[in-house]
Length: 348
Ligand SMILES: Nc1ncnc2c1ncn2[C@@H]1O[C@H](COP(=O)(O)OP(=O)(O)OP(=O)(O)O)[C@@H](O)[C@H]1O
Ligand SMILES: [Mg+2]
Image 1 (cartoon, protein in one colour):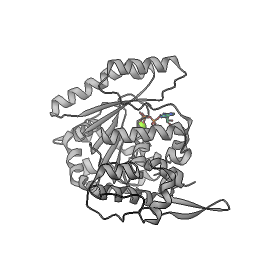
Image 2 (tube, protein in one colour):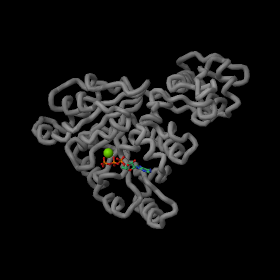
Image 3 (cartoon, rainbow, N blue to C red):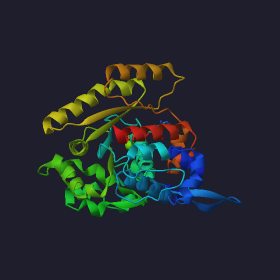
Image 4 (tube, helix red, strand yellow):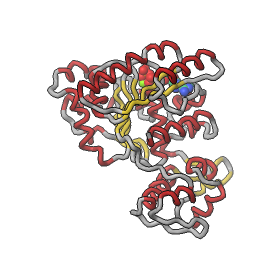
């Protein structure tokens, strides 16, 4: 079973992610903007693009668009290095640095898809060449498992950082090129009492993140399903809160509580958070799904993401295989949803 770090893309898949016409891939290759390698798939040698080469493509594109790096000009893709729009027009889109660097996935209700969407989001963002740190703030360790880290019980967690003063840097592990993780394990379930006894308890996580934030373009936490002090600390540290709401009546019922909890935290800690609500597990064949989505959009109009995450077997399969939905089925609805969610949350 290939893990995310070993993932390779066909030229067509690369073209879909880079939003360029497939016929431009050989051009990018010959002008040195993209490295394509040959990989044995069954008995056939196929042209493939590795995760690292995809990331290098996006990083070069961004650097050129910002006028920092040099990009060799290909004959059929004339690009003014400092003109971001001509780069975008000629070679697809240029994902700029995420507008909200520190984000969290949140809901006090369990099972709405927080860990699944966090994992898919951070892997997809890493594919775009962003330097990403994922932080697992749930003792269940599901984000860690989703990112194929199965030895989380042997590793330091945010518990050691917040309670035993371990530098956050020492709790970070590499998951894949461009994707780091602070894993979690069951021991994290015991953090609430010692954290409650610490001075400036809600500020400790934000202060720890501050020390390492320059190493990353995007920092994303998955949280535990509770109104815990640990989650409160992440609310204080974040710029963007992504509330995952599954499109069922109970999940919708809990939304007013979630939104008022966020409001209270903002008032108490004088924060100005951007809040997004992500409708998840939507099934357009179910009337109840349609009704809940309609209610969400009318009651929380300013907050709902344009992207609706459909209920998709690929999402469960990706969880089972501990990889990205792109690895499971690049043409499936889950891969498309994760794409548009990632674009939306990085440009909100
Ligand atoms: N869009 C989706 N389509 C199909 N299955 C999904 C989707 N989103 C999540 N799931 C599945 O729903 C289940 C619960 O998801 P997940 O563990 O991510 O929820 P959670 O909110 O993190 O739960 P907890 O509150 O326990 O941390 C998982 O089996 C996951 O694979
Ligand atoms: Mg979870």
